[in-house]
Amino acid sequence: MTTQISDESFRFALDKALKEQGYKKAERNKKINEYMLVRLKDRDFWLDYEEKLARDAQKKEEVPLEADEQKEFVSWFRQTYPGVLIFAIPNGGSRHQWEGGHLKIQGVTPGIPDLYVPEWHLWIEMKRQKGWELSEEQEAMRRYLVDKAKDSWILGLGCEDAKKKIVDFL
View 1 (cartoon, rainbow, N blue to C red):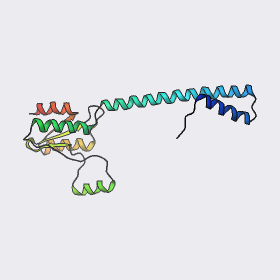
View 2 (view 1 turned 180 degrees about the vertical axis):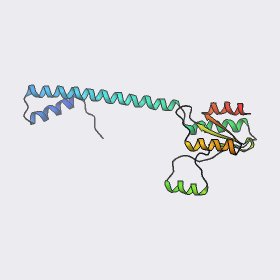
View 3 (view 1 turned 45 degrees about the horizontal axis):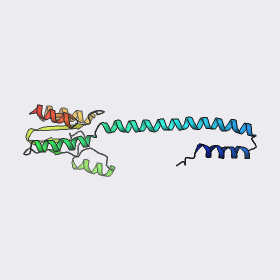
View 4 (view 1 turned 30 degrees about the horizontal axis):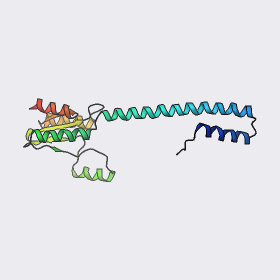
C-alpha cells in the first residue's frame, strides 16, 4: 500500500535527495519539474481509472443480479398463484470441488433450469436482463425437456420478463 504525500512534501523530499546526489540547484529544479509532470499525469491517470471503475460498478448495479431477479419473481409468483407449487433447483453457484463432486454423485445435473412448476409441467430458466448467455448444457437440457419430456420451458430475462411470460403461458 502506498502513502500519498502532498506535492510540496514530494518536491521537498525529491530536492533533498537530488541535493545529496550532488545535483546543482538549476539541475534539481529541472528534474523536479519533470518528476512533477509525471506525477500529475500519473495522478490524472489514476483519477480517470477510479472514475471508470465507479462508472462500471454503477452500470453493473443498474442490471440486477440473476439471484435478486429470481427472488423477486418467486415472491410475485407465490403471491399471484398461492395454490401452485414453484420450487428452485440449486444447481449453480460456486462450490468447493469436493462438494461439487459429491452433489454430482447425488444426481445434480448441469443445465437443469432454475425453477420448476410441477402442476404446469413448466421449467423456468432465469437470467439477468442484460449480459446473459445460455450454456451448452442449458440449451441441451431445454431441447430435452421440451422435445423428449414434453414439458414447457421459458427463459425469464429478469423478473418482469418472467412475469409476462408466465401470464402469456397461461
